[in-house]
Image (cartoon, rainbow, N blue to C red; front, side):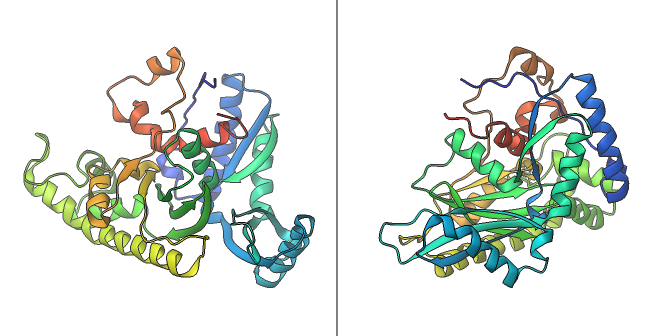
Length: 340
C-alpha cells in the first residue's frame, strides 16, 4: 500500500508573497535548490491554483463520445475571452442516469501561458512533468482516497487559503460547481490588523492563536478584551462567507440538475491554511446546520518514521497535524491514478 516516504516543505519568504515578479524568480531558485539538495528525480505531477482556471458545465445533445472534443472546442470558441489557440483545456463527463437526453460535461480551461510557465519551472530542474491539474481536482482525489467523501454524498468543500478561497460542490465524487470568493486568509489578517490597530505580523499571530476563541474562556495568554476584538474583526467577514455558501448551494440545487433531488448538504469539508482557524469548523457547523470537518490527507496513508520525527515538534508551524489541510493538494497529486 502507498506510504509517504518523504515530505519537503519550503515556505516562500513573506516579503515576496505580494510581489508576483520577485516571487516567480525566487520560486525558481528555491525549487532548483530543493531538487538538488534532496536528489529528487523522475516524473512530476503539478497543479496550478484553481482561480487561474475557468470552470463550467456545458450541456451537449447526446452524441458519440469521440465527437465531444470537437463540441467542447466549439463551445470554448464561443464563450472564452481567450483565443482557442492560447487556451489549455480538458474536460470530464459528469455521471448521468441512463436514458438522459443530454450529456453534461465539466470543462476546465486556463491560459496556455500559465501552464507553460509551470512546465518550464519543472523542466529547469531536469524533471519530467506528466500532468497539470487544478488544485480543486487534486483535493477531491485526496478526499476520495482517504474516504472522507462517499459517492452518494453531496459535499461542499471550502478551500480556504492565504491568497485565495473557493467553494466546490462535489456529487458522485465529481466536482459539479466551483466558485471563487474574495475572502481569504490574508483578508482576515488585514481585518484584525485594522480593527485592533496592530501590525500585520502581530495580527497574523493573533489570528493563529486566537481565531474564534471562546471570549468568556480565552487561553491564559489571551486577554478577554483581545479575544473580543479579534472576534469582532472576523465576524463580518465570516458572516459574509456563510451567506456566500448558502447562496452557492441554493444556486446549485435550482440551476444544476444531477438526476436526483437534493435538499441539503451531507457535509462541509475544510482545506487550506485557514481551515485551522480556531473554532471555525464549529462555527460553520452551527451556522449552516451541517456537519463540518477538516480534511486529513494522511488519514489512511502511513507516514515513514523519519517524517514523523521531523514534524513531531509542538511548534504549530512544524506540526504535521496543523499543516495537513495545506498539504491536501500535494497528496492529491501524489495519489494520481493510484488505486486504493
